[in-house]
Amino acid sequence: MNNKKPILISGVQSTGGLHAGNYLGALQNFVALQNSGKYQCFFFVADYHSLNEDFNPKEKPKQILEVVLSFLAAGINPKESVVFVQSAVPMHAELTVILNNFAPFGELKRMAQFKDKSEAAPQNVNVGLFDYPVLMAADVLLYDATVVPVGEDQLQHLELARTLARKFNARFGKTFIEPKPLLTLTPRLMGLDDPNKKMSKSHPAGCLFLDDSPKVIKEKIMRATTDSGKKIKYDEKNKPGISNLLLIYSALSNKPVKTIEKMYKNKGYAEFKKDLAEVVIRVLMPFQKRKKLLKTNKQKLKTIIAAGNKKAEIVANKKIIEIKKKIGLTII
Ligand code: TYM
Image (cartoon, rainbow, N blue to C red):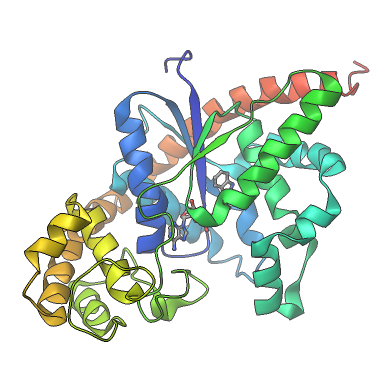
């Protein structure tokens, strides 16, 4: 690892299968940024973050592995990037406890995700859900990360990380770097069934999952909600359905939206959708194949994760010692 490069970090929750929003808003960008050679990259499974909704402990190991497999199958190379599991590095929890004392209660209460999830599951509004953005700030600040590739839904949380860094630095001297978000051209992919709602695991009906079979991909895309009219044209306001599909096509084919519009100038929705399904299948089939292959060598996976955990812990441990010193927690 070249320690002089700026640090980049991002995480994905272990809550089940990843969808096209995760891929186009984050994962695809993780790989491009790693391959740019500009950063020292850390990618982790946010398994602590996944505990604030109802979960089955028997499913957790599989869900954690699922994220690691998706990282690797998408092209994250553990020889270049550090791949690790959040809960294996205890300093994430330690820094959360420390940062909690500087996190404004009112600001956390107003977080969009907290409000949405509280409304969606009023029977389980827990402190973990409330404190989620502070844990996320700890994830990032612990590594002195300068950039964090995420989807748009995480911007508010990252803003809190910046606020906490500023506050802490002002009081105890320069300790943290204020991290900047990095967005893709598809920072907010919308649901296939309802293009006015974000594609989200909590609403599986609108998701295109990375593990969907070619048959399911075709069905889902052909069924995707489109708009009245016939034109294949990007117009987020009046044609949110077609615009969303155009973004998927563009991001997966590396063709600008304008080029795709021209390709389908005199063609209908059905032909466009049929071709889009082919584009999606062409990207996802090799991804699924790599995942399947990686799954057969559990030992190798465990070795990769253990090595990543160790590397992350060395960085995190150094930082937590520095932080504790700054706040006077250093009797011995
Ligand atoms: P998570 O697991 O919900 O999502 C993983 C990544 O996918 C992005 N994403 C989307 N992008 C575009 N369109 C969508 N419809 C869409 N849905 C999800 C998310 O923005 C995210 O980048 N809190 C984070 C995990 C996390 C984290 C961190 C990220 C924990 N600690 C520190 C960065 C840095 C989350 O729940 O992501």
